[in-house]
Structures are given as C-alpha cells and as structure tokens.
Length: 192
Image 1 (tube, rainbow, N blue to C red):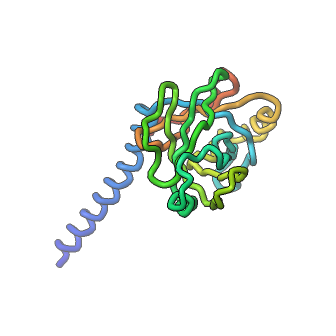
Image 2 (image 1 turned 90 degrees about the vertical axis):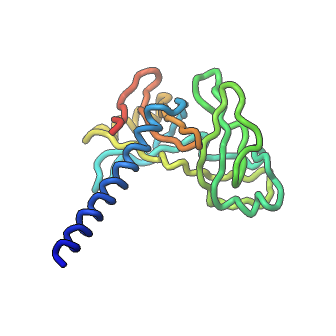
Image 3 (image 1 turned 45 degrees about the vertical axis):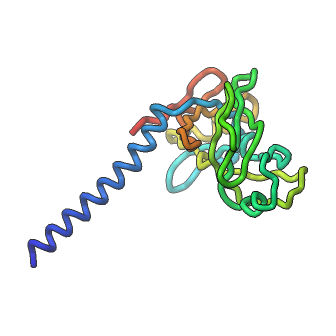
C-alpha cells in the first residue's frame, strides 16, 4: 500500500514537472525561432501592487476596424466572440500595422512578403457594421519592469515613440521579446 502511494506521488510530480517544462519550453521556442515584429505601443497603467512595476500596453493592432475583416458572412459574424487572425504588414516606419483580419479559422491565403498573421481573441461582437471596431487581445498586454522603472517609462511613452519587439510563432501566437524606446532596447525578456 505504501509503495503504491509513493509511486503515485512520484508519477504525479513527474507529470507536473513535465507540464511546467512544456509551458516554459514552448514560450522559449517562440522567442528563439519566431518571426520578429515591432508593434507601436501606448501605456495604460504602471504598477501592480502584488507583482511590481509594469507597463500595461495597448497596440494599434488591438483596435481592428470591421472594414478590414475579409470573411464578413453570417457564419463569421457569429464567430466575432472568439479567435481572430490579424494580418500585419511592415510599414516604412518599421512598425507592423493591421491590413486585414479574419474571424474564426483564419485566412484562406498565406501572408505576402513583409506580412505575418497573428492570433488574438475578440469579445466585442460584431453586427456587420463597417464602422465598428473589434477590440483584440493578443495576450501581451503587460510588460513587467524592474522596481521603480514603471512611472518613468510610462511618462516617457507619452512623449516619445515606444515599441514592443514581439516574436510570432507559426500559429500566430505572440510573445514579447523586448521593450524598445525608438532604436534603443530598454529591457529584454529572458528565454527561460
């Protein structure tokens, strides 16, 4: 009885360690091998009492005009509360901007040169109105900073152009690689 309990406890511990390693490893894989995109950001809030300083970020690609949606049929509008694929194109300013979006399963065609498809979720609904804006969450809305850095960076973001260098996996998942002030990298995320 004791041996069976011990074996069960060890097996459970190994499963938990394996699961945590898989989460960390998949994030590191995106950061190491994903296509890099530079997204222009705007600050929202600088601190979290439990986790320290951070910058809460909003992106141009977080507000997608409905006129960019390529699959505007009835089935797609029903999928407006769920996954959305946003096609970004590299602009002359170095930042990547939304040029198209597809609700649900994504685009029927592959992205072109200097384009990448990123995956987000929307819960803003859509009533087939071309003037509507869908709010998209990519899961990269916060960047944690060393203690005491949040307020100064938030203040600077209001007067200068900041960006997030992000890595994009083949399935469109984004991970933050670095916070940039113009061409200067302020903070980089470690792989592990």
